[in-house]
Length: 420
Image (cartoon, rainbow, N blue to C red; front, side):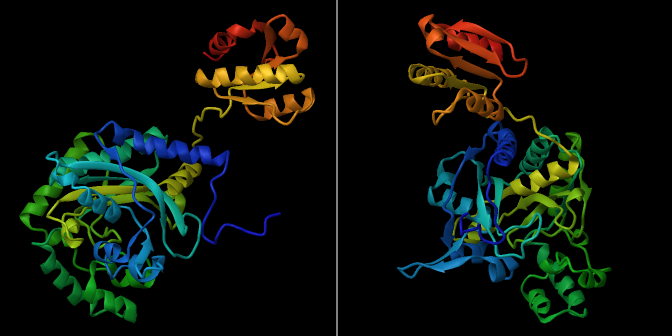
């Protein structure tokens, strides 16, 4: 037995469960690929300042949850706790916004890291698929991204998720609301950390999940009552576009995403079957983030959906994905000559696009057939010296037990016909 274990709060993806995670990633990415989003991949670590500026120095992510390190050269780096800041940094560095075709539409998939108290649905290492549309201010773009996430979840068979929607205003109307909220919050009985947050980013207090805090927030001023006319009109257009496409949502005036960079549209996908960790994904508009990290003004919008959270949501609804078998054909050689010939036949089947495995290790026929059944293959290809002398192999249906001889040189065609 190994003396090493995965670090606390992390998990390994191993077969057969890993096939479900891959299927979820593919399902989330599929509508993005059909909508003009190109794939981007960024490093697993970035300069600490990128997240301090972009995510927000007052957020728990930056103050408590980032994994940071100092390189031998003295650089301060952090394992990426989220994807948006990294993707925007990569787009700016590559000057994608100068190519003349805005918005720049990108999607990504990867692992992210936060030092949190491990519990079901909340890990220190987690997987997300995300999408960003950079460089355009358009309600249709906000609606597009919400619809793409909605359609991805529906394609997986999920039905019991809800979309929460709110507007966080912009640089014009948010300051007056911020001042009104600060006045209200200063009159509450709160701990020192929360009081410091009131001065830095009071909206984050609304996101506090503690019951003792939430009870005191009854009667707090709502941002929706302070929106300027431009933000009201923008938000109404997003709502109308979603409604026109049959995408149901719930207006949630208290919805505040946990990152500082959001403006205007903000949304969250929640699943009530997951208990306290009900969010499966979310996002919103972040019109000022590019300038925060040293770029030009580039209004943008995006989201990230948790792959592990989505898998838990599927389990909560009892949804089983229709996953293709990892192996369709299993080859069983009887003797050394058959081993050589069937190895070549296996290579030919694989090159023809048929998922094929082989009885390695010199197994006897009984053990080899057990391995064939365990593989999930539908067909077994069996050959001995007599078969080879006649130029045939035996093709056995592992479900019905039916076995027929087929020409060795026609094996690919025979297998393809059987598998349909």
